[in-house]
Length: 271
Image 1 (cartoon, rainbow, N blue to C red):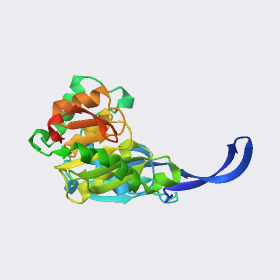
Image 2: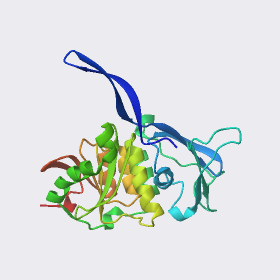
Image 3: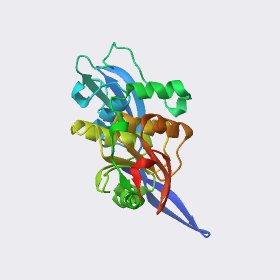
């Protein structure tokens, strides 16, 4: 399996001085996911935590209702091919919504032109968790501390400067799980997949922090995992705000130091 980083030759130019050196860059490899042997999707990801990534994707896309419907996760390869750990198969239990032969009910991502209230209603209908029943509160001072705690735990980012991160925190600010990836959606899937495989869903009483912006897709994933509070260091999209409002999620953007914008669910943020 490829590592999470790779070395590449670069020409360093600094105030006219030129120097050839090697730089550490974040690894990016394709991962094909299959369900019962049938192709499902391909994502570009940073290798590592692939089973978590697959489990998180299956859970947040509604392919399975819970991790117990994933019987096995395994790498697979044809007999005439070398094993590069870039093809993964999930064997699902009978009754799983996305078992091979069943109708697929995926929602498109923002890159596919997803828009409108019908799409949001569809996601709400698919989520098994009612966020409005989650009475979690988090202090604004705790939220303000989370970006530094996330950044301090990003080991691969320290070496490459090129990865997104998702961090799962308790309402008291304790870091429970952190995952890094070239794709922000993959980082979320890895965290949620970890929680699902560990029997922790729904993630009531938790905050998930995105190192970048908060898109509709990330809000959807948090909703499908039962996470009541989503925070991001950058901006949310209009559909992210709308989905958060519709589902009863707290959405915080521009979380930078002591300042933040609470776009939805302000009742959960105490001062």
